[in-house]
Image 1 (cartoon, rainbow, N blue to C red):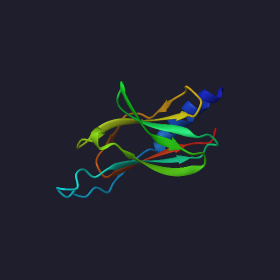
Image 2: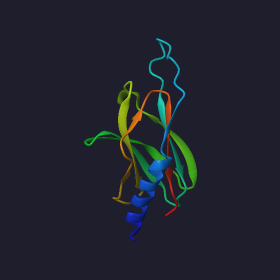
Image 3: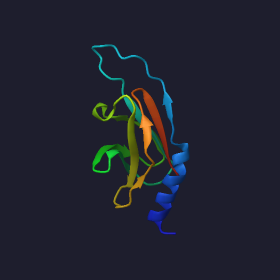
Image 4: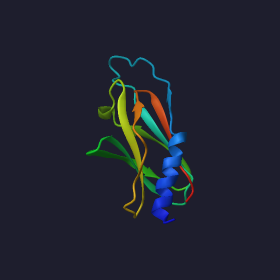
Length: 119
């Protein structure tokens, strides 16, 4: 199996580990919306760019997930509504292959966990 296909298959398998945990509290009126986060556990030896997709044409970069680390990225508040439906994408640095999760519902205060398995 080609490396790009392995990454795609690994991200597809990691969707099962992709879930939300709601810890939302009522935001104070002058503090705005409570953020949501994507926590990326990168078990690979490759750095990845992490993206969030609001729809098929709107892709926004969250940041870089360094190899063998766990990092949290804040989902832009403008993408969050009461029950936003988004997809999370991960692209190895220097590659055109993008692994994308299925569409998930994210609310303010949620933390979505994405596991990138070793290749």
